[in-house]
Length: 38
Image 1 (tube, rainbow, N blue to C red):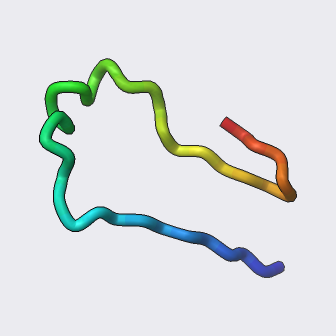
Image 2 (image 1 turned 180 degrees about the vertical axis):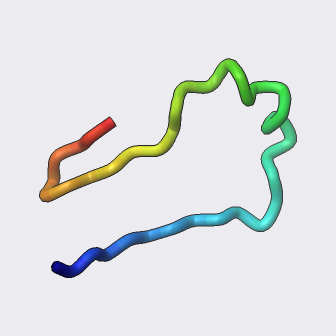
């Protein structure tokens, strides 16, 4: 079994990160064989 992943970590935290922390939806998305699992 082979897994490939891409991880993006920004250099700086967005200015409104803590203000919108509880109001944002879960932004983690998983794609498997061109199918979005959200």
